[in-house]
Image 1 (cartoon, rainbow, N blue to C red):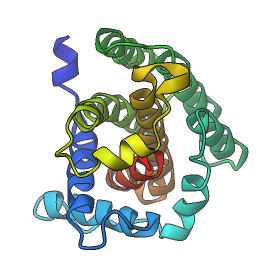
Image 2 (image 1 turned 180 degrees about the horizontal axis):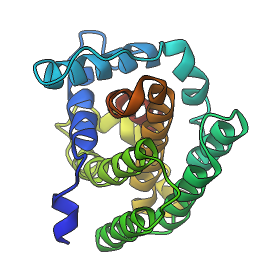
Image 3 (image 1 turned 180 degrees about the vertical axis):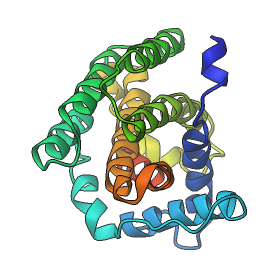
Length: 226
């Protein structure tokens, strides 16, 4: 599992976790809008990379919002993939990689299988020579977010002291799909957020895709969890 701890773009998963922590510390938590969550993600990204890169532009919230609004049910990830493809925001090649990830992610029912799924996804997109540099970054981000999101929400599920605990369990789907499904459902939404942000930010080049991909994940996570 060496590759799981040596991602090129692990910052996406780290920023996801830090953004959710930051959101939970806001005075009006948990009554935080999706827009506030998105801009908190940008704030966290800037706080980490402010001294390492030049200023990067981000898409406005209005460009991201329509896709956040699609995070409603168990199939939100695939719905968003298809919507981005229909709107010409992502290519057929990237859509196929995301669908590969989605189809394998939704059937896992324990952590070991989740790790294997991520490794298989990495091998799959690394072997795809048709992906652009930006599309590879987005794939790496989704792989990273999958693992970090699991660690974050696994703590939430079993830790009553976590600020997100009551929100997570209020929207509990475990009765119909088993206890592991709720975590997988949130992870899938997080990956959709990374995809949306990365695709929208790609107009600003690879760095824009990377920064926005990371910034958009926290809000997607908040929508799915609540």
